[in-house]
Image (tube, rainbow, N blue to C red; front, side, top):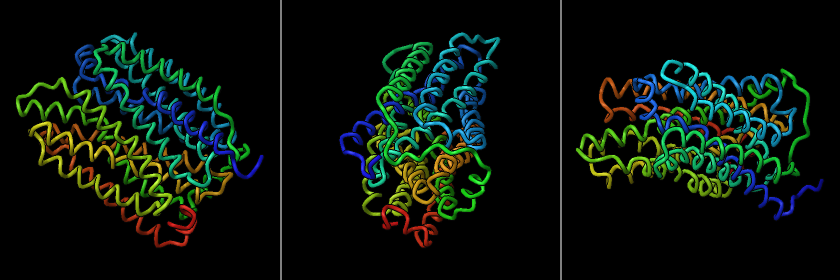
Length: 405
């Protein structure tokens, strides 16, 4: 294998991996996008319906830890693990259509299994992309996280065109199967793919002791404190804001799709900027804007959509624009043979933290009203910025973005 991949091969891999990720990640919010219909169908409260997303997060966390501990992240080819996980996730997701009000606990179990499957797909997609890119890796992983954003927004678009909740779940599963098939049939191992290695507990210990990995992960945790709570509850906030104003809410699914999906191009742009100007600068700047946006939601609640939606578009762009850079920092500071384990551990810890904020937002909304549901999420970006300052001042900064930091 040559040291430098032909650009045509890189472009094919970039498109194939990103599109596969986009299609599979429609599974994540397929239930959240139709939560109002499921609440009515199954007689759930808002808090109970939050478990449709929380179960995915829990499954993802436990699945990611299991993959890291078992060594699958570094002993199985990334694209093979991705494809198997996509098929499992599609099956568990579509099975929710057979749940009734008397068996609603089964829906939580199935969503949990979907989360476990996504733990096999998302980090392995990042590892596959890192195997194709060394120079320009920030851009490449930015494209991948952009695909995550657009895929996560997809169910809201499917819902907006008029399909009922069953149609949304079926549609997401079909897209996930297509994503798995696309990955295994069109993508090959990249020239920078690390050879599979047997599992060793030393991989986990080495990842934890690595200061670059630790500080990157601290930044990622600040980012994740905000991201999934924002994505999960944006539609509810918009609907409540419209109701406060006395407006209809038919526009909410389309606005929610745009707000989440705008993270796609934003992640690409941030990746290009990070490769040139430094990962810590771009990640810290994105967190500063996203944290300020979370606080500013208080000011636009109950106002015209012409004020609410633009603010959320800014928030939607910046809340995820930094995500790929934390993953890229791990790939640049971790030893190559431990890259998959380090990525999976970082991801697992981040999604573990989302359990607090996804459940916390409706608690704040019930106690103080939806106007005050989001500002406390700014705590994460504040702490994430501090981690980026420390990383930029550390010797490990010379490993980032070719020495730019």
